[in-house]
Length: 119
Image 1 (cartoon, rainbow, N blue to C red):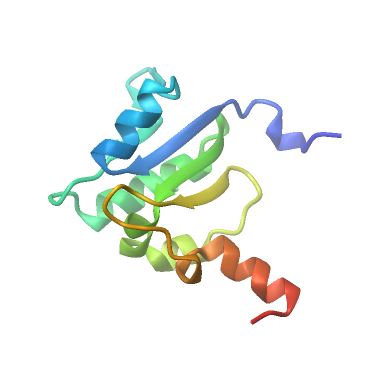
Image 2 (image 1 turned 90 degrees about the vertical axis):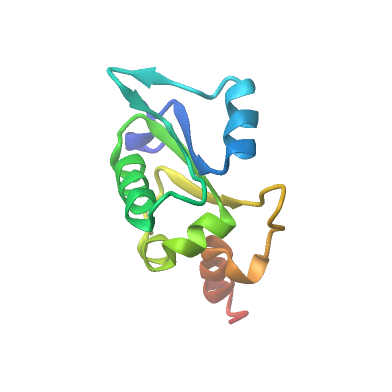
């Protein structure tokens, strides 16, 4: 039985650096409808408030099933990421070409460890 709010969630959204977004777009995940994109390219000039606004938008959209975010970008808005606890869209922190994945900083993994008593 599927989650009732999962039925119409068909898109993957991404907040990431240019390389990550380019790879995902080449894989066919890009979607633009009525001027709304399902991705945000973050560079050195991108303000944390812009990242946070995209995060809030993507986590509230009913068509997004998964939100991917480069882990180093998640660090820029860590309090907002750590507060997020909804099942949909699923939130996954991913590495980038220049920033390796650190499991100790992953908000989802931290929650799993806490539930498992490995805290």
